[in-house]
Image: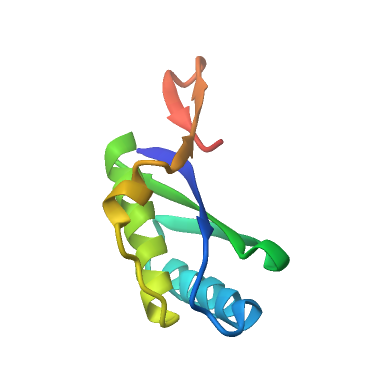
Length: 112
């Protein structure tokens, strides 16, 4: 199994109360973690004055690609659950930052 940390930074528009919206997104991510033991350590940071939001989550799967897809799906689901939209998601997802640490002792990728 491989664990990665994936983060995405968004410029958010069209939200009247960004603070409340980010709280709802984080709450949805935590609910997804509760339902799926392969997701963990959700985090959300926001610069409200600039409408910038960074969402991050740990994801575990058989491969790095599968872990990345699971993390992307969780973030997108949380945004939708909170009432947001994800137009042009494919291009946004390509800008995701994925980190993982390689353990030479275990000869495997481990959580970053």
